[in-house]
Length: 474
Image (cartoon, rainbow, N blue to C red; front, top):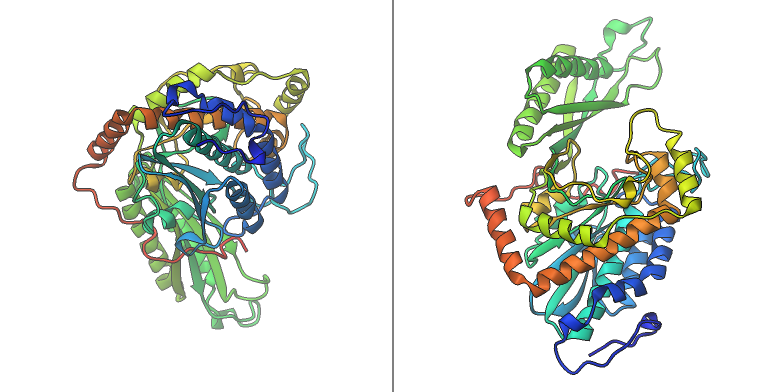
């Protein structure tokens, strides 16, 4: 049965009398979502809400899918902004991830020079507004394709908040949201088109709070015990530790509270640590060593220390079976072509870069297929250890643009970002159809995952049993 809702007007509607999957091209339905998805992306770009605070952004995506008759489950896994939207029944279950959180302090107009519209406000410097919009558009196109063909399958759009340091997907994974899923598809904005298999680092973070005793720093310093001394002693020991950690480890920190005034011995101080390594087991060991340094610092400065694990992510588990399929589809679809105005915008943006970068024109091409070890971290990692998962990037930013930059915000708010988003929508939809029509690929991807993670693997979240830190961005 073919849906004839008003949102589908303008599509070529044909009456079918039976399963005709090969006669219907899902890309026609993707094209029908193009204008509406741009509106959604621009809405999220303007709102730019931070992790676990994305109330309007989440509702925007949910409304989009509800209008297309998806069944919506809100407030999933005790997270008010997380949601699941379903369409169809039976067959394989294909999940599409949809992120939508912004980053603090990166507000920027959609122009090719630094222009802050609202000082201190947040901005979509990682392109999650495009991520979420493309994913819901692809899910909607797939729903229309299922109606038109009569094929049995289930589309599960998972709205995943707080990727930026909040580990939103870990809580969803821990709650069993992906237990009924056969394959997970996701993507990410970037300065290039690539579907190469890649991995990331595992990551565990914690806030270490020291409490001392306040005193006048000039007239009675002997009566005080400095919490800031505790922080600095910890940092010194961790920095000494760097010589004796695995080469691929990364440890970084920022002092979030150093006291109130120079003439007061600080009664409380805090430091926030990230610990990374490509292997989750090594991250656990390294984090334990950081905790020991904190305990020793408290002992030496006669202060008290407590710490809170803020988040923890597994490394992404690459799946070559799925990555090859996505790469081949991306090659078929091709890259991005700029018009004259976009070319001028890109040339101006590139003048703001400080080092070597991809040349203009690379957005038209697909990067070669090759394995990549990334040093960043993402909560997609946990999902990829539970379900065969594949991701890709498209050129939503000017070549050479770094994520988490004002240049990324600028391009993401205009047509360059929209074009990359539309390519992602097509690739998500096309790949999902291929998997539905060739379920042997799902079986092969599942076998690969089991082989890669080991048959005795048991999932335990690196962040333990803590509840979602819903106020971590307040």
